[in-house]
Length: 174
Ligand code: ATP
Ligand code: MG
Image (cartoon, rainbow, N blue to C red; front, top):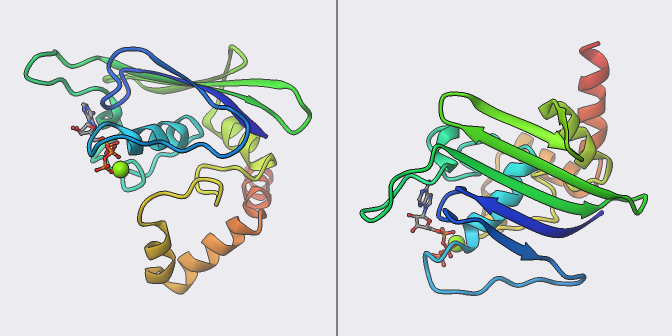
């Protein structure tokens, strides 16, 4: 799978709609402190299903919505759209939207889906929100500082078997 395009609206500091084309190969994000580099990585994680406040540097789910500044009122929703080419070469568009007081909703190729379906979509490509494909500031330190069980999970993900667990949980819940 590879990512082609990221669209954000009302997500953290990206209050105005922003669209980024992701070219093949290595992408670097540069800019001054506080310009939103980490927010972009968090937007990718978030649209892939991330819900952990720690991973999103937020207290609660709605903290990803633009909170307003002295000059601008807050927004009441955040939306992130990720376009990718999946492992079969098919176009894939995943949308996640959160509204204040209404929680989040996902769409895949325009169709309403469950969070679990999105997790499975990315698990199949071993590119989940926690996969080694997304390495953030502090991640190396986290591996060193992790408790054995956490470190095992990180290594399992690095080995690309995390998707199997999602599918096993899915099978067990049926
Ligand atoms: P550094 O180089 O220091 O790592 P960065 O480019 O990674 O900086 P980010 O951490 O992505 O910057 O962006 C931080 C900015 O995003 C801060 O100005 C913060 O106020 C803003 N921000 C985060 N969440 C929200 C929100 N919900 N609403 C409005 N602004 C937000
Ligand atoms: Mg940063």
